[in-house]
Image (cartoon, rainbow, N blue to C red; front, side, top):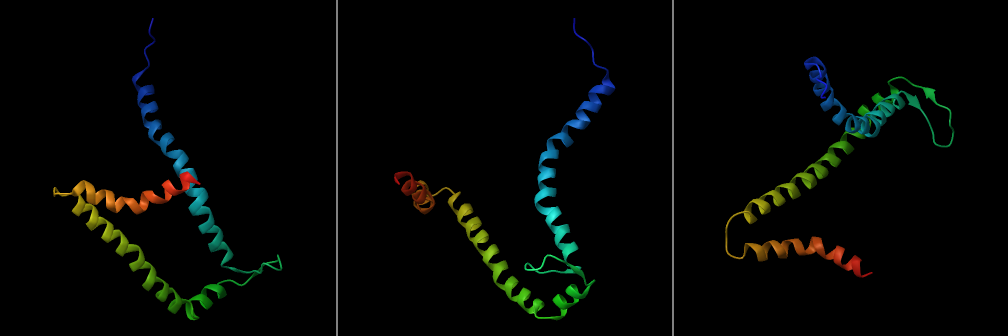
Length: 128
């Protein structure tokens, strides 16, 4: 004899299912990204050293030093190199993928040639 589950209980079970699926990923996100970010923001208000474990409260002095010192030119230089170094390979790969997705003679051979450098290290390691 089958037991009928009330409709409201089914709705509640369905409404709890998606958050239960997201919970492990959300926990990892908090543990890996958000906690270190908040800890670093908290450490910005203290003067500390790796040699001496005590911390002294300095307020916004560290933030002011970072913004008025040589930090900003160094950050601009870093971003000048890191943004193109990130975006250009992505764009080259996207254009290559779109090009190799078109129908043309020798497409399979060209795909194999382009994948060869990616596959080769795994093959070499397998013989070691």
